[in-house]
Image 1: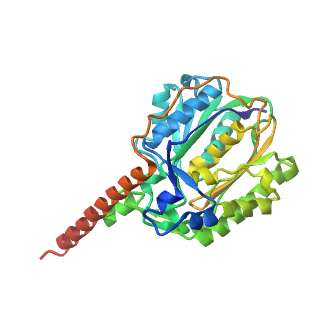
Image 2: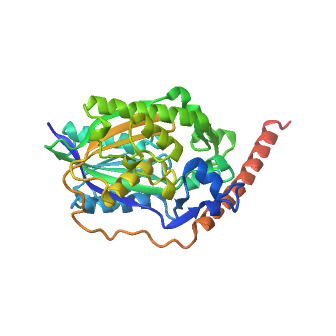
Image 3: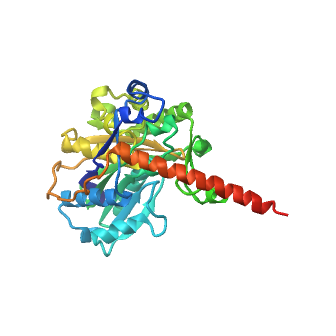
Length: 375
């Protein structure tokens, strides 16, 4: 039987760090309020488009695998904050990597986009359609954030990570998985302003407001991720004692603690990045996985459990058998250009642009009303 091993991994975090103290300069909050409710201290704000983050992470993953861009058969771009809808973002990565014979498509299941992409890429390799795949999770949430809404502005940041999958005879890669969606609850996490629906309401793309029912999201996330985790372990006929590390979606420290407790994982078995990067949506889980490998927390042959959830409300859990290699085969010199501004300056620029957009939208609505009621 053919399997899909993870043979390359890489991440890309923007250099500009937005601290809780920075957020307190324009929001009614402070470090203690944010930390006690979320576990977050910092998050990253990108000065480049999301596709640049993706390409840098992809190049690092490909070098880690000892491959070249032209060797890639399939590019899967997981994101809900794409730079463009047409053409798709995956084709932009393919072009820059010179993967001329590759297929390329985007996946959007919000925070679980990378995890769904991992299932798709693995399945296509196992079925013989492709011999390898590049799976990317990337978000530029800062551009779509409602920075005046304290409940969501403190939670999210930007980033990217990627893995290279390759066909293998050994049982490595995803050995059990569960994908599901609580569609009846899709309205509890909604970004108004992302999508063509809102153009008819006089709202410009990026002029967002967020529906975010924190209590209900907490309940559904804990229920979904813990049940999915137990399900994949049961189907793989393993227990938490067999799992070396749990690498969950890092949406909130309270959610992570609750999921770990229900799934039977002690704190020493759970890998955390929430304090450094916040929630990077689809980039969150893969960035944490890459860091876990880099820090030596994933030994050769280890079982890694990765539960996640996102808007939709989508959820997933993946049980991954790591291969024998835990170090890159080749170095990589791919780097982002230096940021000309601090994270706070970048955010304040976005806030100023949104205020101008709000004024334009109000003028548009006034004109539309006048035109529709003329005579």
